[in-house]
Length: 70
Image (cartoon, rainbow, N blue to C red; front, side, top):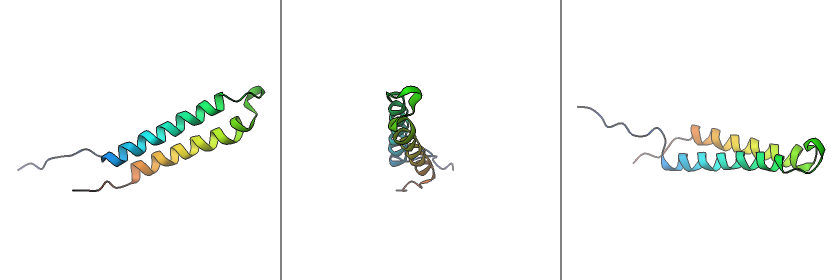
């Protein structure tokens, strides 16, 4: 008999991955919207990179989190 193989991740994992991807895109948009020359303003040096790093942390957590089995 062959056991049925499921997906590698559960629904909650995929939702967290999409959330992390949204944070990464938002962070890059914030860095691009900085009005200071060469992006040396608050958005380009502080808010944007912190948002991108938090997005990558969410992605890491989404991959490492064990999905709940039925």
